[in-house]
Length: 160
Image (cartoon, rainbow, N blue to C red; front, side, top):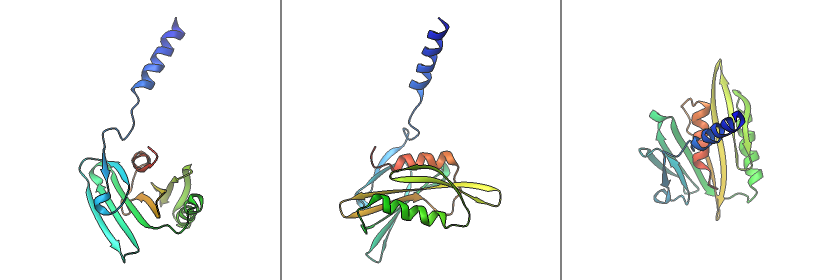
């Protein structure tokens, strides 16, 4: 009887777990000339910059709730997703404050950096669509907790 009660409690707890982005809304970025969408808080400030007609930089920001995404889009230099991700890994590892990779997936990774004794986290997520490559990352200039980064990382997943 105890085992049945424990199993029922476990199933109830698992059923109550929710997606960390379930209170966020879908942001379609076609108005910024990006054929992708991301999840985020309802109230975000969206800024878009055309970088010499070669690439596009779009940021979505609401740092009051720990949310700041930056998306870079350009013509695809390769169709090899693993190569593009490896290039991003190399760039991150070259940073003198880089500590470790926390999580790695085929399309991206979460990493830890440390400045003095302050640890902070970041991510990169790569995606191809048509002839465009997209690099999603946390916005710079803000220190994020691991939970905030995990939530943003989930929010940019283009396979959801």
